[in-house]
Length: 447
Figure 1 (cartoon, helix red, strand yellow):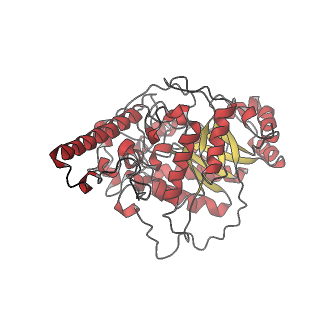
Figure 2 (figure 1 turned 120 degrees about the vertical axis):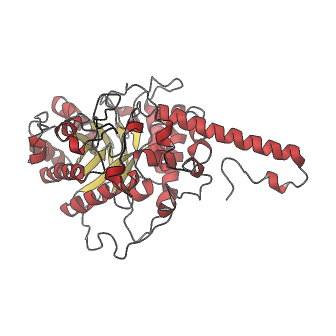
Figure 3 (figure 1 turned 30 degrees about the horizontal axis):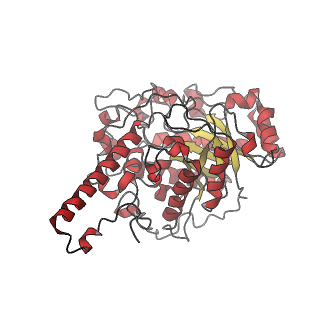
């Protein structure tokens, strides 16, 4: 198939081009490569500002170190202009071993009889504080529109859990709070109204548990604790004890009645100072992608038989960029082979100028979302149909990114354009993110 961005071979077919044409071709390739690198570093600059579902949306921009982003030889060679794949059919992700499906001798969870009723989720994020102070307003919005889902904070980026649960590990470190005083009653009310309840668990960013268990925390080479630009400590995904903790919390959420467990920040930090961290002793031969994927596999094996669905939030950039995938440890291809839902955060404001050949992505909400989701189709197509294959359910932008130089004021049209882009890409589920819990009602059908 013809290269979507640059046809590197077209000059070689013109035998009479002469030396000038050859030189011109070389210049074009050099310029293209420079453009790709430039956009990558600009994208990296925004990592701290877009750090997943940042509740403040005002984090200070920070750049991923060159040493870290280039840690694997040839990493940049696997991406094309703007960090994208060379062509639509070239969707092999991360490295050769992940480029095709390698079925296990026994189909993963082959004995699991899946009787869980699936829901076409159309939802909103709701903070724990909002659930107590304005719960009725949130329910009214869902009941009066096409919405049917609430993603509710359970474990926050400070490491606190928003209600009391039967978790010895959380109790020992003082992580339990009564922010949501009666979670059982809350869940019962949601179920009575037919609202699909999703528990959001911030995973690796956890200063509370990291401080109490430094042996499970990310540390620098000198033995000191790693802290990101916000001062928060992170848990080390290579440590099994970290996954034990997450699974214990998740199981309690299932027991309480949540329909689905959603893991956010289920990745390695991109914060300044990560180039001073050495995981080699804990990792052995495993990569960051191995650590995250193996943990997700284990989570799914524990939670699915309990009747709950499992989802993870991922950077939108990892859909098409091997560099980003290796840095954060998220492989869209591998994660999708275990999860029920994979939720790329494809907020247009979080993409650097030039991504998908869009001058200013925030000003093209439909195009950005549609391009990204069409790329997910190409990756999922490579997964063996007899195995597990996650449904794609993207996070969409329902906020105005005033910190972006070229941006739109997001209202009815911009939000609806993103939703329609989801449908046009062949998907049916989506979630809206607004840290202030102020959603554009007019963009929703039924309002």
